[in-house]
Length: 358
Image (cartoon, rainbow, N blue to C red; front, top):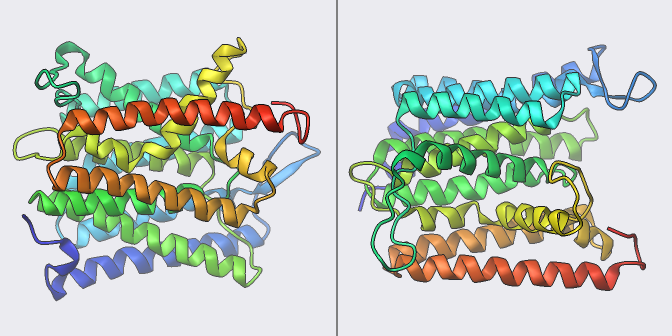
């Protein structure tokens, strides 16, 4: 078992501090710019201006801090493709948000970018693990398509949580914690340290946004651009953690680290198909919408969902660490999703006509 990066010596305090402080400072700069006379993003048209553009650049603060910290400790080479996909997805998300680009065009661009970078970097889901007890499932020529599908699905599931403020950053923080712990416990020093530096940058952004809200100052958000960036970063790190020589963490265990938004998005899409609606059509039928309809505040919903996500991550981590068979973890996830889907459908059915119709 490897040593956790946080315990690797005082020399590691410097890059962690660089990640944290630079993300915090960049977020403050963006907040100041947002409160000034910067350009506004036109939300629903010229008569409905949204926040100023700097307020939507929270992801940029994280990217800058991550780049500086990995450079300072000599890990930029290991993180270069991760940094590339984060930057490109952030730019794509910002472009589509400002330009009101159609969802299908945006997703097509995501697929092309993810496929090219995954192929060049060699980060592909070639081995799905022993999911049903018949041995490892090797994906062969399906490796790249499945890789892209997994990353796009995770990113889109986070985009669907856009109206629960703070969830994407807090969820990413817990997921990165489990990815860092799993990488360190399996002896993968470089991947775990890269994940830890990204988590430190995210922590700087999170702390600063909380303080800005407390002080009633102009705030900075991740927005759809930041959501895409985080989704692809988590997908990339999870696949990299489970594939290749020396990797002992199975894909099914890593799946638990990011399972909650995938559960929710999968259920929403299934219910859309049942109603013969487009899966790309935005609706208010996610788990956080249900909690809002039940009277929970945004802060209460955030705490509950982040706690649930952390618990699911613990199932994956300790299931792997304690030697629980991969098929057992797979069936827990499979039947867990079926139970969740059945429960949320019935929960909405009982609320239908009381709060609003979904």
